[in-house]
Amino acid sequence: MQEVIGAGLGAPSPCRAVPGRRPIGTHRSRVATPMFGEEVPLSRYKDQVLLVVNNVNYPGARALYNKYRDQGFNIIAFPCNQFGGQAPGSSQEEREYAWRKFGFEFDVFDKIEVNGAGTHPIYRLLKQQQRVSLPSSAGPPPGEPGRIEWNYTKFLVGRDGVALKRFKPGFDPLEFEGDVRLLLAGKDPLPAECIAHPGRKVCKVDSLLAA
Image (cartoon, rainbow, N blue to C red; front, side, top):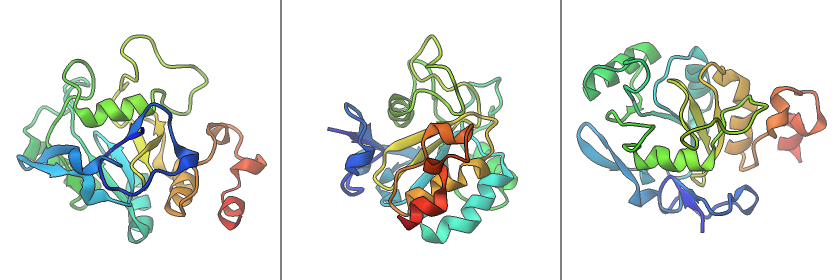
């Protein structure tokens, strides 16, 4: 049985199944996290393609949101103060700071922990599903499995609630626009090799969308 980022998000796609893992999707209504001090079920994002971050600081993320939000693309953020004390304010202060940086209001949840014993269940699932940030030629780093390396680590979650890719803090969201297009169309994301070898046949987004 897969675990997803929520419940009732629709049946998981067989081709995207991650054996032994559950999406933050088929159980999304059972997974909740606080926003404005109240528990919010992630079922509110049913059938959406999500970019999940703990902080947003990329014009590229805003560009993707503006371009694809009407097709079902959304961004949600979970502020965290575990990285050099970069989020020392209250949940509301961090929320307003993110809105100022991003240029408009989007869903910024209350502060959580993403590493260690206090890891929030959402990030526990995300890290179980995607333990290595792309681009990477190495396996998972030593220590805590799936440890978030720094602010701006990004997870791309399909419409069925499964985290399908994870990107390094410095990786521009515009670099995975092809993945967003494919997921919105109900297809699998590009193979990881496409970051280093975009010219390969399996990396041609337009051809994959037309197939």
